[in-house]
Amino acid sequence: MTLRGLYAITDTPLLAGGKLLPYAEAALRGGARLLQYRDKSGDDARRFDEAQALAELCRHQDAMLIINDDLELAARLGVGLHLGQGDGSLAAARARLGGDCVLGGTCHAQLELAERAVAEGASYIAFGRFFNSNTKPGAPAATVELLDQARARFDRPIVAIGGVSLDTAPGLIARGASMVAVIHALFAADSASEVEDRARAFAALFD
Ligand SMILES: Cc1ncc(COP(=O)(O)OP(=O)(O)O)c(N)n1
Ligand SMILES: Cc1ncsc1CCOP(=O)(O)O
Ligand SMILES: [Mg+2]
Image: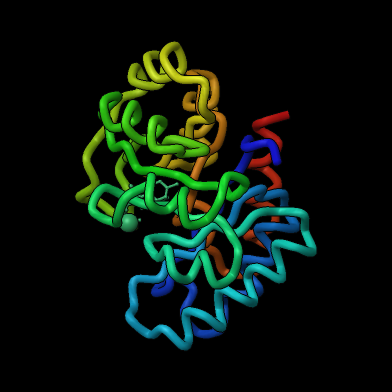
């Protein structure tokens, strides 16, 4: 699968009250290519059920589900995985999940972290936050100049995350982001149809 386009990331508090599946489905209908299940609760049974339902949605829309933080859950479902610094070894995850699965790594604003992620088998490298983030305001800040450097140095797809909106995404794409990862500007919406419209607008930025 080509790793380019909108990368939608779920947020459990934001999608509480029965919004997770309809809003995720709307994002996929609008054109999200990757969908990350990001749930920080320790409720393993609910997490499995929700991730399984999201995997099914992704299959129908020819998109890819990525699990955040949790190698075991990704392995159980046979889907992709995103790991941050402190979430475990990318090399171990690659060995466990096999060569075909999509594996992503957080590199904050450091090319050295990307160097290591690539060496350990990451399918994509993620930088950010690039702008003020509603979801993770304390994440380390990155500058757009970093994208120029990353693009020159790595042949892996680059994900830009953090405060990405329809206003800020074009600049990131112009500087070399292959994907934009979005939570708030996609899912903080009043209806599923609004999410679909926003996803379609993000996806169109890659045409
Ligand atoms: C695509 C993508 N990029 C970065 C992150 C952040 O991962 P991490 O630093 O581990 O922080 P949490 O998301 O786990 O809070 C991500 N999830 N996805
Ligand atoms: C998980 C994460 N890592 C860096 S910023 C961020 C949150 C992105 O969410 P938003 O799109 O709402 O800024
Ligand atoms: Mg993490």
